[in-house]
Image (tube, rainbow, N blue to C red; front, side, top):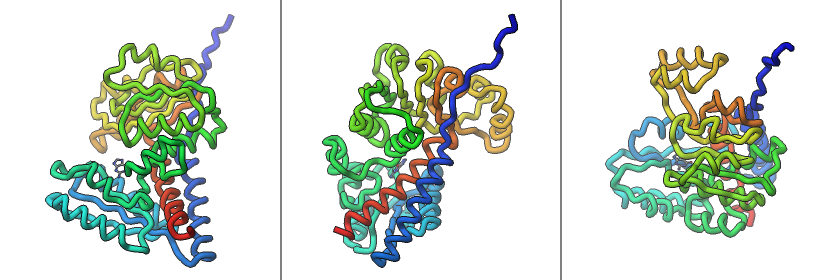
Length: 316
Ligand code: GUN
């Protein structure tokens, strides 16, 4: 008998495709608001200091806003900005009637208290969904501005016709930005939700029961084949840099490794999620790549939150 050598491979969920559709919808809504109501939504992104990754993320947010017709400002403050000065900056933006969305990019310099800053943002303009009022509303299942990355994951599942209700969703990671709001959103969609973290015992025993597995703990390629149930939906939220060639060989199969090695040679690193893509592709039914997966949805959902915030505040 001839051995069947065709390996089953996961379907790749392309962030680019979904984010383009969402951005197109947002751009149309922006046009409609201008035509019918005479205003364009406005987003202000505040950045403190010179974190390199933040510079790239903020640049991307501002550029995308402008492409969609959203008015966008970038306020860049020096690293030594005091907490008081940053609070005053936010207060001014809270008061400005033309500003619909305020986003203060994290991480902040160490002398600034993150909670004090997030609590200062007017919840109606909190397009990150990090203010305790929005977090509370999300937990209560009320309509709220939800954090962009987990909201993007839900959108991706919805648009891929992947059923959530009744499924066992396991999230690895309990951050305020991804893990916790992801749990709330999946719960709202009637999944049975388990949250795992660095102190979880027998991790693979739990993750291998997941119909939907969300990896968001910030460790390159940590989730391996043994953690994944055959036929699961694997959502990789991690973004890590890998510069070691041997490590890269463990992560990428023959279809991808050459390209990745060239990237390491050229840039010094390649982007890797929290899931080992080589092993996930062989076990999962669906899998989100890094780069080109969930990350692109984050920006698209920020645009949508900005338009939603503008509509709730201005068209009351
Ligand atoms: N830093 C990393 N991700 C985010 C995000 O979604 N929002 C903000 N404000 N800062 C971040």
